Image 1 (cartoon, rainbow, N blue to C red):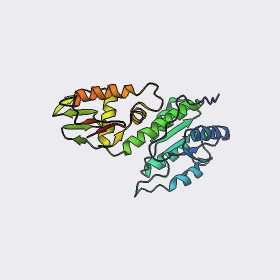
Image 2: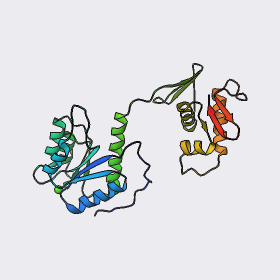
Image 3: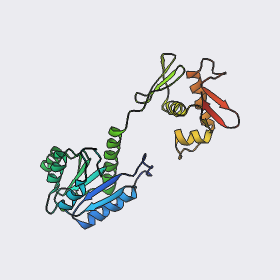
Image 4: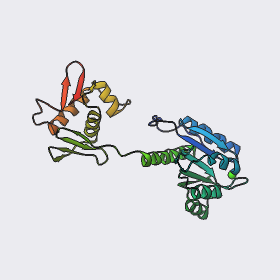
Length: 250
Ligand code: CA
């Protein structure tokens, strides 16, 4: 049974460009279902009905510039002409690092092991739920994106230093403990020094658009942050109140 439950979580727009997914599947029903589900996720989907077409699509991989035309390949194992294992092997042999999610009708352990051995990143056995497949795709794309993202720079202003990757903050050389929200708030402030933020904008950026609650939440967190950053929280030099507008860093 192929069930197409609605996605559990609303899809947040991915950072930057749309991900391109190649779906290689010879069974029309499954292919159509995959296309629908992945397009609903906001991905650009290209399909191939057989192994040879898939290889054609993937040929455009440019190993010099390392520009893969696809961000993810959903690859059925049993295909006409060239099977999924061989395609996988070929791609890895060419040095193409595109994440591959392999699908198989057989639930045998050997297939799974073989699939992963030839370089697939993940493996799903038919029948699978669409939600499961979409979740796996999302995870693979996220993982890939993280590995290609340049490391976030260390942020520094006067005597405050924030290490985004380590989630650490030093104030006057001393490490301070911030809650995740305080950290996000400070990171946002420091990323846009001197920019004035309204409480609503801060709520939206740090708590997310789905947050229900009032802007007093922002004031409370600002107070806590000031206590941790400022020499004299009643006369702040880092997080400054801009009367009638909101807050500013620096
Ligand atoms: Ca097949």
